[in-house]
Length: 72
Image (cartoon, rainbow, N blue to C red; front, side, top):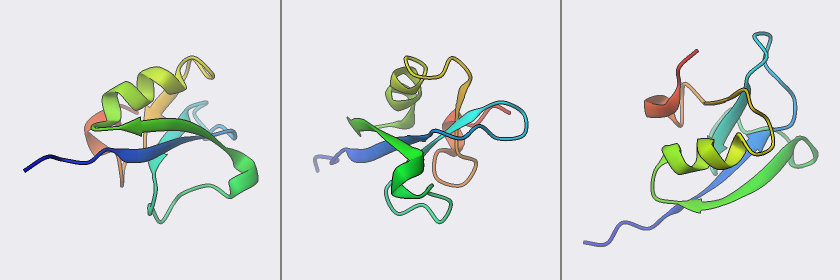
């Protein structure tokens, strides 16, 4: 079965530790529309975080929706 990609976004507002979190559509912690940047459609969080780092060098996956990419 072919896995469909998901829509990923990065939060324009940094967390307390300076990270800009990457989220997938449907995450309970998704930032408001005006506080996020659309990154694209990806099969996993890793390329989404790579794309987010083009905007914010300190980008990280959300603990809840992108746990494999959450490092801090």
